[in-house]
Image (cartoon, rainbow, N blue to C red; front, side, top):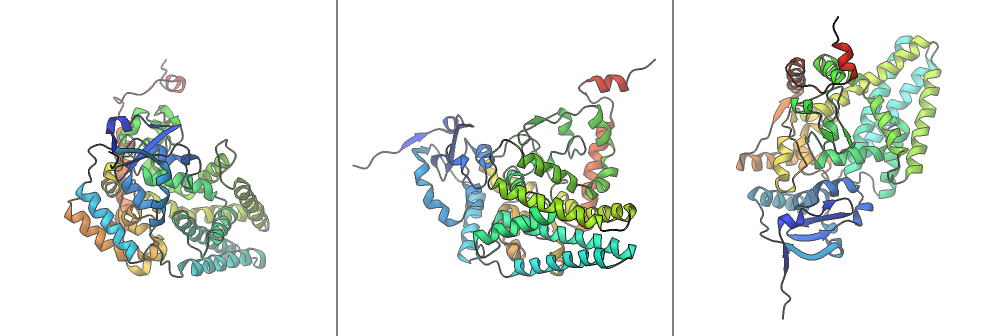
Length: 447
């Protein structure tokens, strides 16, 4: 006689969503991923954020077909009562299956090898300009070329964090450490930890680290309620200092972006020297030390402090273009408060994302971010295929009356500034309730 299935309700499943007790549903089967969260390649945070609910769409988006065979060892024996699949999710999963049959997730072409050669060329010319020329103009151009090499290395770091860009995992890791840690001074481990959280909780003000820039920036007045960041595990206080900075954020946005990589340096150090588990911590730290050896030495080869300062400023400012690009895709899109939901995975990704309209010959400039909606829905898809799958995603959105927002690069900049300006003007309204602190009292003391 066949054994009858055991069921638990959604309410019972929600009781298992805390550290040390993580259950998830995938296609209606309940899995205990508590122990696996310690070894999960994507980190524990995605599992924690999606625990206590169905996470099938997220699992489909992030895992190859081979991953399904490993689920059985986590099966609890329970099934989710009244499990159902929305029409949107059905079509999303069919589309993912079609792309898999077409081999799109495996066909990476030769873009990474070419890009590595371009990075090496830009870096070599930059170093040559510093060491072999006495011209201040050449030195500034060398700084700009170095900045462009950092941008291109950023695309490799981004891609290799989502899928294997080289012929083997070993070479993929070498490419990550060389282009990320050694060349750019940014921990690829930190990047993956941060970026996975962003993808899972796209545009959640409390769970998406890419929107948590208080006290410098606030993309929504909802942040004025001093929300808690569950990524950084701290409260994002909207005090008098934050109000002042946010009030002028539409003016400070581009200047801050010119030096945004300084924050990435700081985040990398905090991550690598934290108490959290960091895979290959020694490799990561060694790579960072390589950067902080060659870059200061290169700058010291310039003839005077004026040129050294300008070289650093120019190289950082050029890289600021990429930081702006990261913001354009999400700052002006819909935001929400609360944890991510696995039941409307497709809808949340499209609502919180903006595509950039551009010609195919400009794809090199955007590094795949011009198809950010497609990338968020299919993060394992090599960027060389994003333009190809875009019409299928548009058709699916049209069928289900879902948002598919696009804008030119110029318009996306305007939309971002308008979003920041709107929040800035709201921050200036005196009637907004503000938590009092000593700074507030000092600034507002009269007589």
